[in-house]
Length: 181
Image (cartoon, rainbow, N blue to C red; front, side):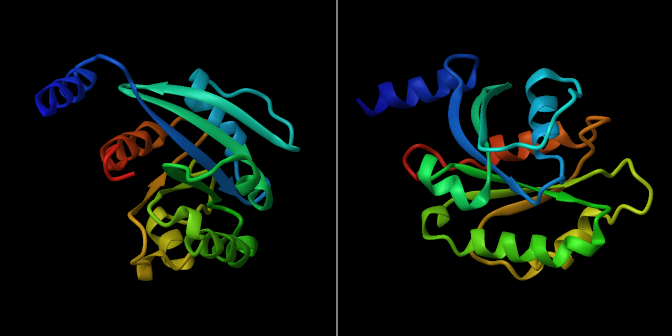
């Protein structure tokens, strides 16, 4: 039986059934969550309006099938139990709201339901002048001190596509196996 499971896992990595994962998109209003989600799904920028309620989209990437929930942070636990990954989007230009973003991120990092969840931070809007670097944002958000979660910060631009696929590659490499989840 173990040999069959091992074979099936190897087969899925070679082009068989995609690995499924639930992803929670979070971040402050206007950070670019919905724009990034549709850039990942469609490969192009679409005109979006502020999200009220939630959006659920499936993003297919390499051997991943990601069910992505773009949802208000206070509401997420009512719709999604134990996501496999959190994508936290930060506006790299909005320095005035960094403290608020850091507080929101800190509250997610202490959530019991997210205990074994990996965190990908997307430092969005890198194409704009005066954007903080991913390294600077990691420092401002307090992630350098984080020892509770596996995390990565990726410089991105929803408009140019910069860094988006590198972030998805990190998720693919760092998702816990089915046995660990």
